[in-house]
Amino acid sequence: MNSNVENLPPHVLRLVYKEVSALAADPPEGIKIYPSDEDITELHTAIEGPEGTPFAGGVFRMRLVLGKDFPAVPPKGYFLTKIFHPNVGHKGEICVNVLKRDWKAELGLRHVLLTIKCLLIHPNPESALNEEAGRLLLEDYTEYEARARLLTEIHAMAGPGSSSGSSQDPNDGPQPKKHAGDLAKRVGASAGAVPAALGNGANGPSSSSSSSINNISVKKKADKKRALRRL
Image (cartoon, rainbow, N blue to C red):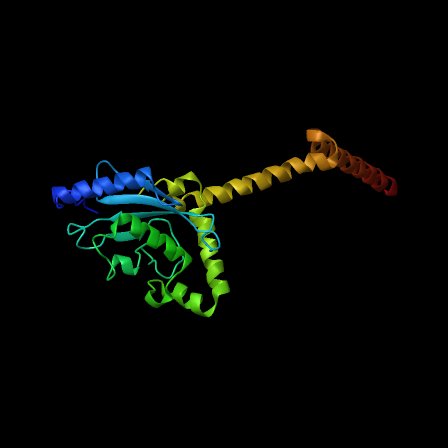
């Protein structure tokens, strides 16, 4: 997305810079701010999933984009971390009244961030962008909670990268690596358990194999001798 720094009047840029600096120095509880020195019109943040919700324990990266008509027009909000939520579209777009008809220029970015965090606590199925999440929230909360928790565990608990504020979503990559690592651990544990179970260390399987081969060889010789006697 193109920067709107050149499109905003100098006095608006000064106000935005002042507010973003204040947010970075004293962010709202559970929210981290990642301001950019190059583009003050795009603010990256990370929101901690509130306790008591299916998003608890997760860190959800988000960005606010200030358009050329800001603050007359509200910023646009996008979740960068995948989330199963009625008011978040499949491309991460956020539907909340403060970013639409309830916007007022004097509200400020802090109010927007707090409202989006509250949206994680109190979803609004009546203005759902994700219709499936909205339907489950109304008809089968247990299933909604399970789906939301699953995506939180997969995408929002992937490690430090989940709260880096980068516009590139790193949560799609680590999952195969994580599974591969778990598989390697399981295979390694199984391999280590074999000699331990035999009680002979690493030589156990080799000694057992040699003994079996010798027994087969002796048996073949005995069978040959019996066959010769019959002749």
